[in-house]
Length: 427
Image 1 (spheres, rainbow, N blue to C red):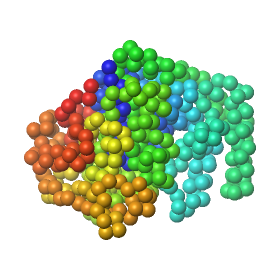
Image 2: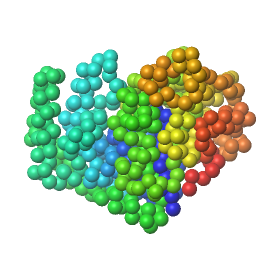
Image 3: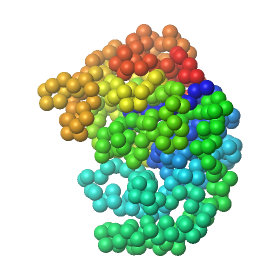
């Protein structure tokens, strides 16, 4: 049975929550494998809208076991608050599994994130200020706090002391901030232990056993391909690997277990935070995409930068992830344009470039080369099959498929769970 990876093929916010939720009723496990509460998914079920920040989207599917893998960084207060909010709305969260090897976002990680970003001024990255980057830095520097450490006070205290030895020097001498007390941090973290205990598990063992038993496991990435720490628009990236390879390390499964990799593409392009964005619009079209598409970050609340579809980054996502399929979202947002530009290449120093340049300088100076495709005015939100779409909408989808390098197997024509056209089954 398949192990599927589902990830963003642009800069995030492509609608991964809708895609995961669509598959949720057919899979046994949904696994978040990287990121933290800097990623958000919006899922619409009937007349109910759910904004998920840290929890896997599968938490809304009754027959599915949601898993937070070892590659995720976890803010305990955010996790418990999110669980409480869903419980109050009648959602059963008791099946959640939390890796004991996942790293904890501590109060000092959040403090360091915020003061560092302010200190950078005009050079700031555009982080969410939620402590994600500093937590991953602690992980790599081997001074991180893991979920399992909450159950050994002696080890927890030693690790907090080791982390604060340097951080307090930086906070007090560089940023003119107060030192953070070790005892205060330890006390706060220990306060989460009993509340998290029912969820903590050896998720690597659980997932591998599930695959051996031919269960269907869906690995859900946060952010998007172009925000990957290795393969994104560095340094304007996240601190983990949302690309397909991240599923293996972030969940503890071997690459031979992965049978399908699904990329989520928005029918146009958006980005949150700083960094290059060749097709970004600063005119009425950009504002219309933002307004019609409801382009405001689920987690950050910031307006998203909007632009036309970029086939260059779609091809790049296909290549670095080994994509087998695309799920195209928000096609309905483009209804009403007489013509729709699609970026098919870049112009860099007077030369046409059809693949993503590896040079940060070149990408920063890339200008989009557009091909104009005819638009449509018909309402497509009630379409149930590809043939129900207007001819121009069909042509738009086929053009994007050809340019992007992988088949489009599903199309979102509205925000609702049932507003999806399935062309080929993912299972």
